[in-house]
Amino acid sequence: MGAFNLIQMTKTLNVLVIEDDLIEVMKLNRTVKSLDYNHNIIEAKDGEEAIEKLKQNDYRPDVILLDLNMPKMNGIEFLKFLKNDKEFKYLPVIILTTSKNQKDLFKCYELGIAGYIIKPLKYEDYVVKIKKTLDYWSTNELIRVK
Image 1: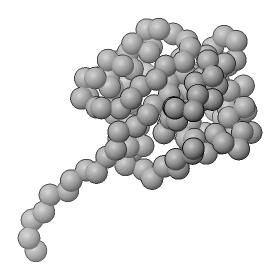
Image 2: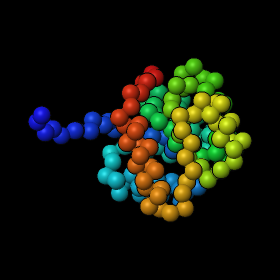
Image 3: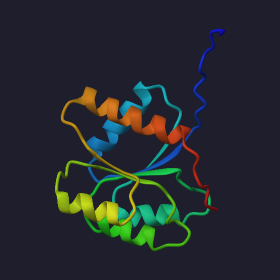
């Protein structure tokens, strides 16, 4: 048996981050940059702004990172909209939240999320979780909705 190298075949992702806390958005961008990833991060401060971005013809995310606690339209309200829309319902949504509420967890999975991540307090732990998440989705076969 000869030795071989595994080459990770990854793609650049369009990531829609829906988060109202500017510090959390800055932390995510810093993490992606520190990991030397080339993903395109698009930001929306709430569900309403995210819907506006989704309806723009020139932008389609591959994956959505969604906070639950936001003004105007919260994460669960946004999920209900997304999963009831024939054009957007297949977009993978990963909840990225501080909420450990079991009711939120069950409701989100009931609505069809792809994952639920609790934001850790330590930055190093946050980096590990974001790395694992982005690595997974950049190797996954995704549906491109036009």
